Length: 293
Ligand SMILES: Nc1nc2c(ncn2[C@@H]2O[C@H](COP(=O)(O)OP(=O)(O)O)[C@@H](O)[C@H]2O)c(=O)[nH]1
Ligand SMILES: [Mg+2]
Image (cartoon, rainbow, N blue to C red; front, side, top):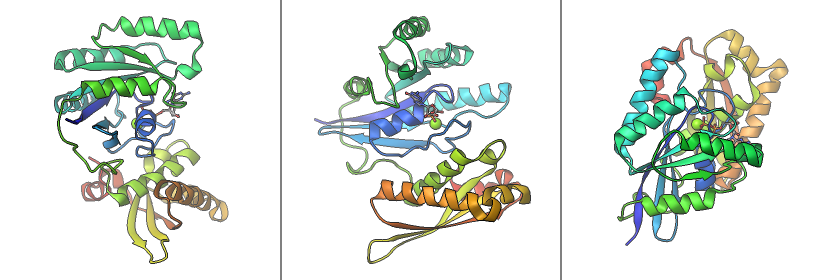
């Protein structure tokens, strides 16, 4: 009998949840940057072995001021927990265990579902700092094993995955074995473009931009033609994203094309344009189309 189920990833922003999902899945299904608000859409990463399928639910981080943040955090965590077979709590080993971690630990305990803890970024820690961090993590009082890992290098990830698989209920696969995520193709491509915007911009730009793929054509010769729009909220932002003589948008476009080619295994032609839509973040119908909850 095969095993299959959902594991929710809990943890503070920047802990490395998206990086870990990509590492386990073996493909870039969740985009990663050091900017807050990188994960806007809930992404399910799917890893399939011979007789098991692990579905990792990568949750969006929090971006609102303290009170609202706590409120959202609570709702997100509770909802993810109620839908999941187990929870994987990812901690950033580079940071002290904080109020946010204790909050999540409490919610996990309350939900009463099996928990596993990954102490991430140990590639950045000395042996003695790792030991200290493991002690602090154990002090959170969560039942469940603690795995020191590096999502970036992959160190320690294999035993963690084995352990998670053992926790899954018996049952048939939930997705076709070849699937890597539950994102629609055009949303996945748009995320790959947005990742390149995040990597190249600063201050308010990363938050102000969203990307929509309006057309994807697979030509007979295998070339993928992708038409994408980058939405910004003001003419100033548009000028920044386009850059002097179009340098910024060209650099983003070229890197995004490479990223799409790496992910799809096809040659790609990417047509990327920047458009202003004032207050797109408050526009419900646009948010729906962009797939942001
Ligand atoms: N050194 C190191 N950096 C990591 C590791 N995992 C994630 N990061 C970095 O931490 C930042 C946040 O990662 P991300 O996966 O987006 O975190 P999330 O907000 O929890 O989804 C990115 O810059 C990652 O490259 C790790 O194991 N080691
Ligand atoms: Mg993330």
